[in-house]
Image (cartoon, rainbow over all chains, first blue to last red; front, side):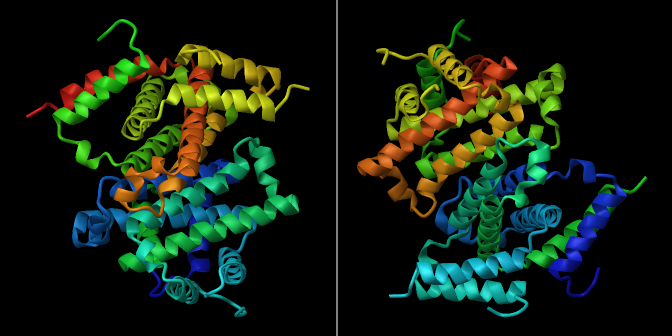
Length: 108
Length: 108
Length: 108
Length: 108
């Protein structure tokens, strides 16, 4: 829709989408985190019988590439909705985590 | 660190972090998607014995809130690294998916 | 087939089934454990939007009951095949674990 | 403990263990399937950065071998408890599934 969607804009679209369909009643944190895990597994399923080398070339096949983008979208959608219902800022959480990891895993 | 981290900036920090530690050799798409699923499960573990009502109040406990933010960060980190190695734009993928879902699930 | 299938007999049928189709090449421990996680997620998907009360009545619906039995079979199939390729005895492993847990979680 | 534990005997030990600790209240099908997925992910975690070749030798390391047996036990424990609360016979379910798969994937 917009030229360059940003995370906050997508989060709003997801909230509007769910509200318009009265799906908020299903969106407990527990249900959303289950759905996140299901979508992560659907993404993993694309790779389950591939060698590491085949997995690196998965986007060469248009059908597989479409599935990958589709499942990435689903994982991100449930992650953002989970964060929205709990008031978690995923970008700040990741930034803080990288800060901590720089201390935990010093470059030698 | 930065005031308002954005997704692209975090993706660059993650790539620099892995490169400085020579972790790129482990970051096949197949390994990264496995790690994504492991982190999604660690997030789910926080909720596994909670009722829906308890799950909605999980951020009231500071220890649990910290774990939630920490696991959200891990899920997002592996999702972004997975997308980076395969050249997938997660925001565009999600925007396209919402467009398609608006057709699949019309508001009645 | 047999009246009372036992675990060892099912493990043999699974091994014969895979051998007859030359699937052994795909059955690395890493691939089998990924497949196990995918099937566990497909089982979880049946329950993802259900309340605890609805989840307890899932077998009342014949379609859902069939899906549950089908996914239970898939989870068990990959668990048994994973154990077979690594020489793990799942019944002994569980028996040992229950022994240890009786020490870890004494009845008060 | 017993010389040759069987699945039904282990299922009874698990039920007694949970009953003695009043854990039955937590053992909804939905919670048990979430726990199953968490344990499957903990098993996958052992393999996440390994090559296929390394994954095939995982039992050579005693520490890793212990973790593998421990997580196999946890996966089986939650699968059996899930089946018990829903009245599913996992061995019959798998036997039926192999029968169906023999029709779906004929040997050529």
